[in-house]
Length: 327
Image (tube, rainbow, N blue to C red; front, top):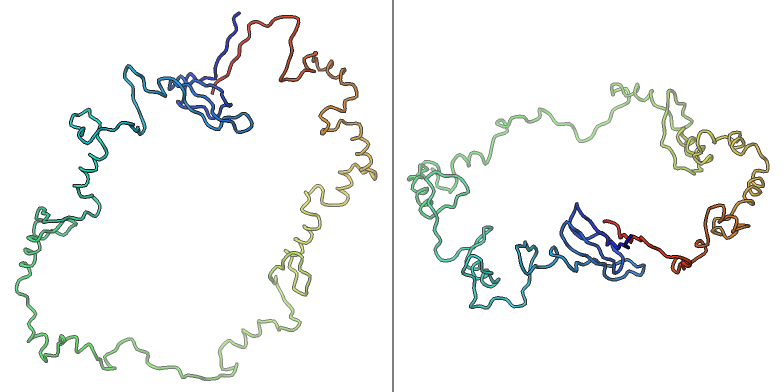
């Protein structure tokens, strides 16, 4: 069997580069027919960027039809005497700017000279532009007017007569005014105010009050230690803090003792049990018989070699397939 080396690849799905590559690692995407390589090194062997290096999907082909996307910058731009004229000619930016500079924008245009527009039909009331002809037609429609000074300003004081009457009004002509006004100050005994004594009888005194029913009060902040009234909420919070929100099965001393197996020497028992275990921080270096452990795991002599310099002697390796996988 011949040896096979395969690059990381994608044969279907989404076009574009893989999300990540190792520095110098190659990957081929058959969807966009582009070969990518990991560029740069972040210090851990991972590429800091991924760039396309080959394939008709990433470079302009010299023959055949091809769709080119994105903005392209030409090192040799068309000269001023090479303005586009044919349908397939490239257009220079200066040529487009020259054409656009002679046009007014759609939003808030500023016209000069004597711009014209169609004259709207008389009576039109919309956002259509009004011409001078439309304005003159509208003014003619007003007629001569019907407000004669001699009729509406008979005393010739510059005010319409009806407005002069509105400048002042007799008290009798004002509607909705109050019939009487309360005095500025007054005093009454408790007995003169209907229901006041009954309302006071339903209140508690400030000194040594005796409450009935279910009185309430603001709940003090946890840890408050003053003469402020303690509510049931404050008491419940204090008890909850004492047991530190322990679960229902471990919020009493009896339940805690049962959880410890009723062992008065629980700490010593646990310490003795842990003494016979391997230390996680030692990473198996504290195995009493490492050779026996490797044999029990079915590991041969290669388990003793460094992964970066494995030596294979006494034979040959054939039929090896190095596969970069897919992305």
